[in-house]
Image (tube, rainbow, N blue to C red; front, side, top):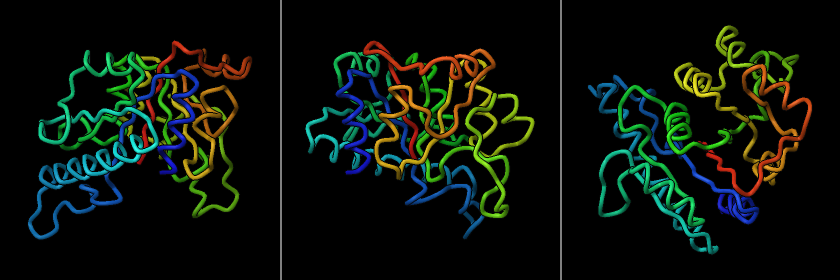
Length: 233
């Protein structure tokens, strides 16, 4: 319900919102691969189905507070959700509906990070908002280094060269190639999604040099014609 309310506050600004959900709270494929004879591909498919469970739950919650929502899955489960069709997803967004993308990319060995970057590029979204359980990107692991400090801005190249564990490298590279900025922030802090949308500095901004200069020189708020993709897990 907290997530639904956060998204609802953004849709009221007239911004088109799509969401990629994870399934790690139910099943994380990479963690279970090799257990009881479970191979990595099968483990990842189970994880994808976990994301569908979360997507259906989130859809029901959002519609209970009046936000029209559609779930699209990367593989067919036609009894409970639509299959992913790019043009249909864009049409839903244009009609003011929130679209939840589930089942990752539909392929094993790819994370929901990569699914978020891929769907963002496909629907021509302006930015990926990665809602997570930390305040942003740190220069070191804050769990092991008490002196670790949060980075307000960082380039794609820095994320890759310094191996900053914020997104997997496939997702970072895909965002870099398509010039998609990423904002990493803590979902637990109420209002963070809306703050990111209106241009307030929240969490860590990841982009190319031009993006970073723009971030420093202006609030960079989105207008009502813009589209975002929220990646949450």
